[in-house]
Image (cartoon, rainbow, N blue to C red; front, top):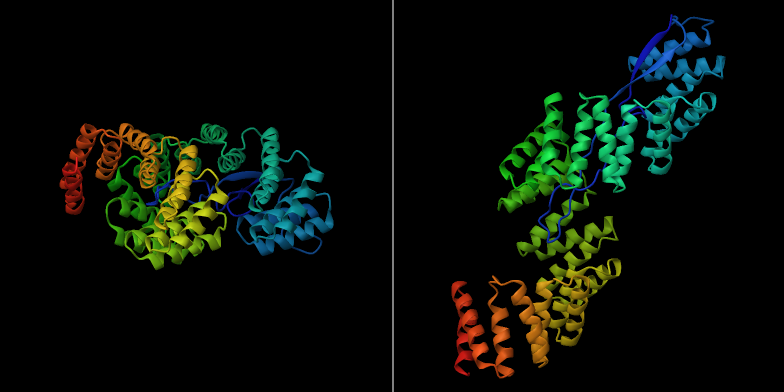
Length: 487
């Protein structure tokens, strides 16, 4: 008689642990920065024993020790199971299943090198063992060796095309490496094979968010919640999808539920802070960011978002500290250098700001907003031609950058290059016909007056005066009237 043992694979080298999947929620920074929740996959795989289990007694056979190890493994008595598998291997070094199980135990203990030794031995003895291939792939995945992991998952699927977990793992690797179509295909296959697997829906929901398909992501997260209502990551994922759809109240409800289910999940607080910020509640957003950082001091997105809010509240010292912390954690963050430069410029330290913008541009030579910001900083130091050069590079990187046209036009005006100024300011106005920036029309009015187009200048000054008046800017309104009186 053959006995079949069910091995629960969560946390034992045959299921995922922490899975950084990508980006899902918009930060209050000028450029969206997204975060991904962690995901766990729970699954079951069958492992066969060749004989009835025997009692622990002197003279226990290899198969008896093996079966005893499986029983203890299934009852989660891993130390006793390890001793039993040691005995089985000592009595029969060709028992592949014993190496497999012992490898799983070592993986559960985070002893990955020992786990790989046993799993390799299991595969030497039984090269087509889908369970051993899958287990070794999961260990490689935990070690960050995606190439070897994917090779093992591919081989496991060749040996067993119905291995749901292998599809999920392979989909995770594809998702992390930007192959979203392949990831979605694998997650969908896993769902076809196991329609009641909540983890598969959660993972596909995250993958759908990566391709901006938030409506379908909501459907997948909702299905996962129907199958298992206490999944905090499903609520977090759905909350992020609702956020992206502009359904902030629904997003807040789900993220609150995620926090209730798992109050230690830093990313739930991080994502909820984005909702609070969008709702105009920066104090609550800061409280959540503080909590996220307390739970995970290495969460760069939280420092970035907190720094941005602090800068908006004129807490420039705190903002600079947050951006500096991001750079400690990730020295290659061009955005952190740019944001830190913004805080320095806002504090009046243009020289230090220029240095940070330059670092950002070394890391990302096509960072248009960093060129624009460095141009603003150079302009504030009186380096008009340096500013014009930066604005020009911003426009090379982003030809439809209206703010760069406006800034370069104003800079051209300062050095009396009236025709160039007129072209840039006109480009900005034409590209944004509903612009409410009175300075644009004021500057073009000045340029037109210098070019002898008094009628055109008057029209621009009238538009600028109207906008200044609407916005309550008395000084700009008076200045515009003064220019009109000189025509």
